Length: 314
Image (tube, rainbow, N blue to C red; front, top):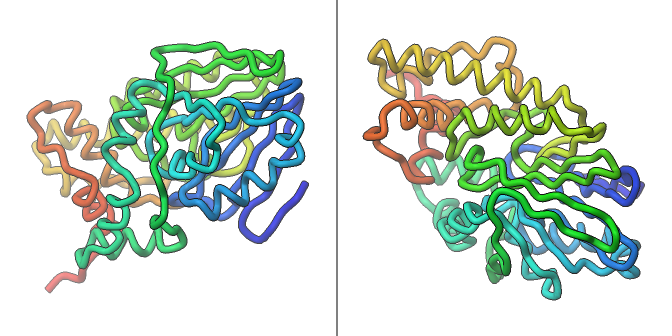
């Protein structure tokens, strides 16, 4: 095990490995490596080139003998693919829905968001100031798949399953049956608050049920430490609770803002990034009313900013 102050290489089992960004939270995602006889599969890159280089250096003891031939991006949020250009020889594979998200938000969009002199910009800077979004050349998937794709990585069977739309428009889990291991992408935030950018909620809950049905012992989340199936139960409980609470307030005629401010988080209140509730309530309202105004990224960050740092009453 090799570590520094902010990240840690973790050897899992039977050819599976993890680069765990210990700080967690916004943008601090995990990456994985599955090593076969003579080739490897990389699961996600990181939010900027500096972080991605450090991760690739940590995996080099394996990839020198088993080069990365395939890179899977679990979804289209930048913290899982902005470093793709540093793996030039790999074929990039992603679910079809992930490409739409990649095209929608690229490094220049993050630069504009974090430079904005608005509440959303101030909030975005406070959570993303550790990342460097300049100098990145976006590299998009070479190969798209629908529903499920099975790969042979140097004799190791790896299953890619698109469980989205859920967290985003396309969410891929990576199942390594012989190692009884699953890399969940952001279907699991271990010890953090889920954020439902896309939905529907039912699809995310179904994704939790699908993973619970797999014969796995090791669950590698998109953010947070290695965990077990208990994290799927916790994720499902949060999603069901928020959906029920928001739906009741929708039926009562409350606005999104009123609903967000009045939902008591109870046992979920201590989870980091609790301001993501603002996004999640918007998603519930959009599900219940297709005509509900769909906010763009900066507006959603503004809603979270208001919840995280409410302005005092006059």
